[in-house]
Image 1 (spheres, rainbow, N blue to C red):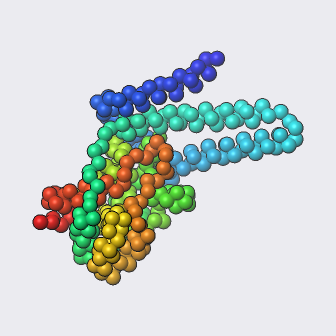
Image 2 (tube, rainbow, N blue to C red):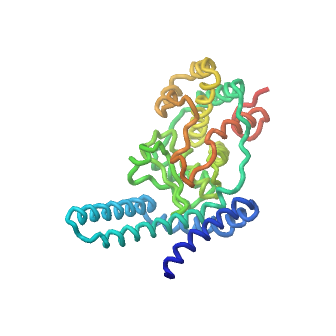
Length: 325
């Protein structure tokens, strides 16, 4: 009976904690700074000892245990034997999954609860001006990108987290199936990226995932901060950020004004067109959807970066985007 009370008490405390974070931004900020960030940093240092993403191994282990339990249940049912061992095994898998889900919520609820005011959606004229500025910058760049391994190794310094690690996925097939180029796992403190993604996309992706390690949960806010940090350095990280922004902006422009999108595309020089084709830019008729929709890990609009850049390009802010008179 005591064990059952414990498994009811843990989810109850978790739900109350998440609700308190949701209704009180001040509490959420204190919880983030005092509990979540130190805990995720410690988890990050611990899991960094493994050369592979621990989160992938945990997920594979749970999936394997559930599959084994199901196979045993079917075998016992076909043989007409007692199913009690299966029930115990299944109960164990569910308890472990529940404990991990509660731990994940306790770690990430404060970050998710913090408000983020997204910039206004730009109009077609603003989008075309931003795209023109990005194309001008990219046309003038040599567009040389390092290997995924080199980009992942350099990303922590660019993100302002020297000593941190961005890991290459051990089984990236699941990322490609779900259209995920990168993922941050609060439960293990790991930033994971697809090493087989087009090289021009990897630098910005890696920095974006490290922004989550800094406690930025909203995907749009993480994109904006990743842009700022990537464009503070010259070379592949700045170009990667500009390519991501161009993909988002051109997708939005295509929906608002298809002829304007074509005008922007015609201004690309051949090297940029080749790179843009390699990152599947032509196929982006809309901002990229958030990966893993519906999970507690994701929130926000990735394309919010476009609105922020349109504002900054007008205000002549520190964004490495040409100012418009």
